[in-house]
Image 1: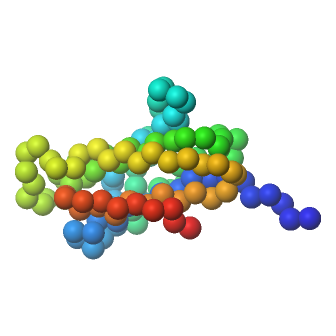
Image 2 (image 1 turned 90 degrees about the horizontal axis):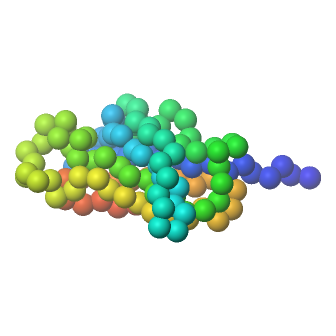
Length: 121
């Protein structure tokens, strides 16, 4: 009998303007319950634009609605790019549901004027 997959959440961030991983970008994870938003943790991307460990896994993983807030403005300001004040994109919230104990991968592709996300693998 096959062992059931444990749930986990991972992410990575790519800077499409520079063609590089977005290193040093802060991400905050929240659990959403109705109108309430409870902070779970902050993580920071490494040199490869990834987190050193899953953002959520093991006993901490629960199905439900979550939000990753990518602090893109801080990253973009530190990149040396010429940017407007205020920034067009500063904090990027991605709200999503996890319906089963599976691997959820939520990547972010960013530039100073746009972003894209999808459910990756």
